[in-house]
Amino acid sequence: MVLVLGVSAGAAGARAMLTHSDQPHLPPIDRCKVPRRSGGGMEEGVFEAIRLMRKSAGRRDEFITGIAVTCRCSAHAEAVRTTAGRNRLTVIDEQVAQLRYLRFTGRLPAEGSVLLYDLGASGLTLTQIDCRTDAILASKRSTVLGGDGHDALLRWLLVRGGVTVDLATSRRHKEALATDRVIAVCDPISGHRAVITRSDFADLVAAGIHHSVSFVRQMIEETGVHPTAMALLGGCTRNKSIRDELEQQLDLPLIYDPEPEFVSTRGAVLLAAERPSARRVRGVRFNPVPALRAGASDTPSRRKLVAAIAVTVTLGGTIAGALAFNHDGDHTDGKPPTVEVVGPPKHS
Figure 1 (cartoon, helix red, strand yellow):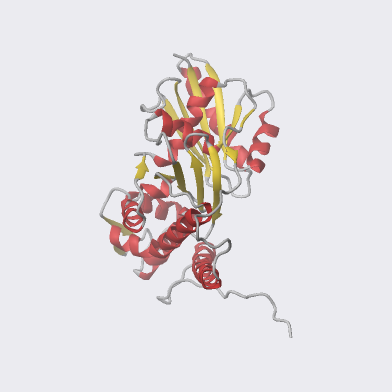
Figure 2 (cartoon, one colour):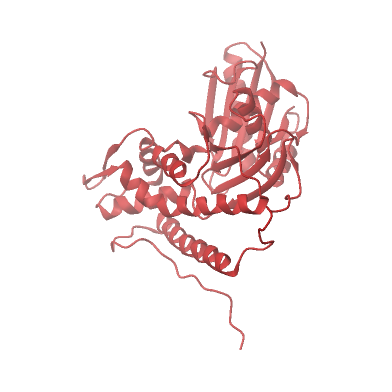
């Protein structure tokens, strides 16, 4: 057995997992989460996580033989490569690592396609991949609602109940609702208390989840390929109410790992062992979208297009307002935070 390190980079920061190469599914030797510094680059968290895990390995008098870092986009990958210096590491497209770990656990279907539903801090990434060839059939991203938006909405709900907490505290309470049905939150200054239930949180995020369901259906319609299963990834999918809502609205078998935010990291561990000296791994290929099913229109109808735009603008305005509230102060008039959405100028 060799000691390897997997790191996943995202908008919220970096996660790292130190373990033996044949044990990515077991509790790791050590792991850490490094939040992204305000105004800092994504790569800062990556290399801080690597430093911490090297220090941990040193205390065990062991040597890390391979390091792999997953990135969602080419800009992040380039930033990691540029900053790497003498660090020998593998830079991996995130979907490659996710597929690799799902295969390792036996959850990935052998045939058909899988839809990766990755709901993270900054938004939702959907990727439909052919399970046999690893070819990407379609990929979409929406920033209408993600973990940051969930945090903002929860803080707004708490303020309505007379409780004001900072962002880190509201995030802890949101994560607690993934396992607890009821939580009590206390204002550290006034002493006021508010009780929040999992159902309260489900109501808060319902509009965003409904939007994501439309997003999934649109992708399936565009590719003309019905997925064999949908894998739930990202820390937001820890919340049972979100999983239940997706299962209820989508007729798709769900693949769920107990630690969905670490699927990319665990996949990186596997690839670090396989390619300890590689510089970049792009195992997923992008294929042109296959023809739609017979009888399907090549372009969405005007009604569907207008409806999709309306949903996106409405949700975007609400969440943008909530995020503005998150940074600009308290909001106490009892109404959800909103912003004015200004369209393009009209021509006479």
